Image (cartoon, rainbow, N blue to C red):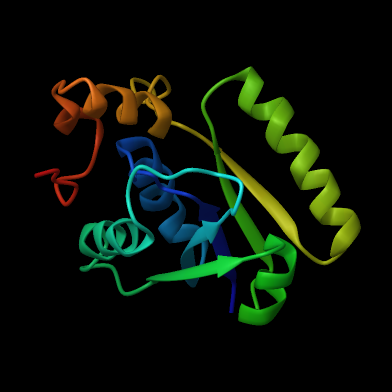
Length: 152
């Protein structure tokens, strides 16, 4: 069984995340969207809220599960039996950053492959940090996130 972990903070999940996961579904038997806990990061939305938005977004997809983790992604992959880490790339800066992480992960766990998918055209400018800024400034964030993401 080919299992991939798609790790991230998803603060909030965006249409870019949705694009990557949706396009990866045919490639894997199971995709675990893993909401990571980083003690050094300040989140806009609670972990519970982020997990709920992701579950709601993918509720019709049997291959998708949602989980939470802390610590090394490689260790988490071992715990859940994943052979792949799924990552999306929006631009050359993402590639350089993600390449360094992938190479480090490969040294930590030699049987773990990172699979990169390029974000679809028109979605590469969307990031969670930009969406948070739009939300903070009371902008129309809905055009950047799945329908499940609703801020009261």
